[in-house]
Amino acid sequence: MDDERAVAQVLARYVRAADHRDGAAMAALFVEDAVAEIFYNNGGTREKLAELTGAEAIGEAVAGLMAAHPPRGWSHHTTHDHIIEVDGDEATLDAQFVVFNTQGHERPADGWPEGAFGAQGTITPIESGYYQPRLRRIDGSWRIFHHSILMDQPMAFPDA
Image (cartoon, rainbow, N blue to C red; front, side, top):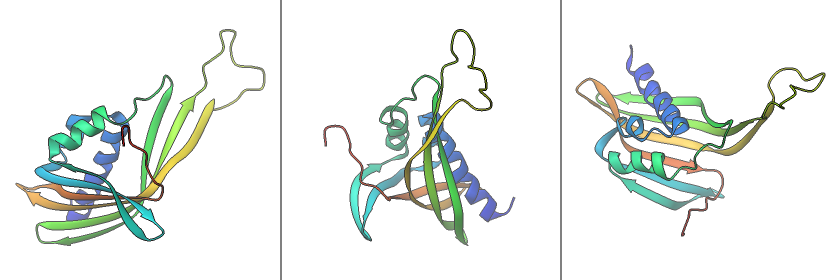
């Protein structure tokens, strides 16, 4: 697999770990002393919202700070328009993202109403922005050492 494809797969695994709230899978994508920063793009001015240091802390945030999915609910992080630059054993990736909440309707006890067809539920976009990880090849595998998340919307955090 070429380097650009391998770097892109790190982001693909990142969004799946976020969707699954899988802290161990997320932590495995980062170097031990990685830094993840979350910013709000306030009219072109970056406002830092949060910073996490260390792969373990990043994984714990995904597993413990992201809201649990409701019954019949899920999230889907999608990424688009990847710009990847590889320079030896370091790489940068810049990708747009959109996060969708999906919520399946509960099937009525007496079945779906007459005329119901196809997927039953809603899909709502809830977040968008840019993922901008910097990666390093270590023992043949690409790992994130610095990750910037640039949100298009401000974020509220508990007790903040």
